[in-house]
Image (cartoon, rainbow, N blue to C red; front, side, top):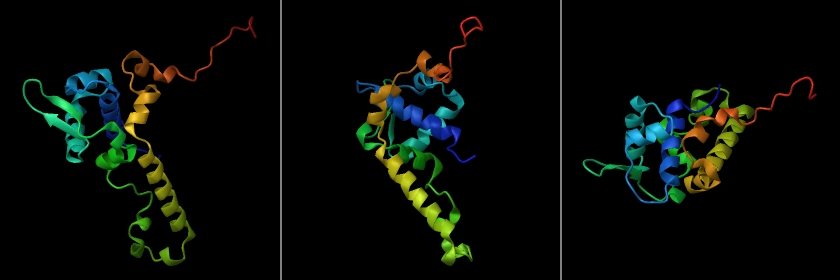
Length: 160
């Protein structure tokens, strides 16, 4: 399966949580882990990577915590994916074509390259301020029960 890692999903949840908060404040990793259903064992490592990428800012001591390093309108989903996963690459031949003897005449390489560019462009267009506006900023029970969305109501044979 082609997809993002669990850590990247957790990173997006952290940034979304901070983006959804209307007030400028520091939040503890424990509070975010609890509200966004992120295992506490992972959150410090994720916050460290997001801080190194300039997405989060951390403050130690009394009144400390984590906050966004820049406005949520300036943080894209691509920023978070690249902070956690590295550069987006669907096939290594798009980055180092010289490693493949077929690259000069390969039509598939062009398709991989175009698909990568399209995905990068889309992810760069999705900012966390827009994600927070569409209800993604809500935390708690609603998020925990998200797997129920889309299930059809069962009907008894008498109703059918």
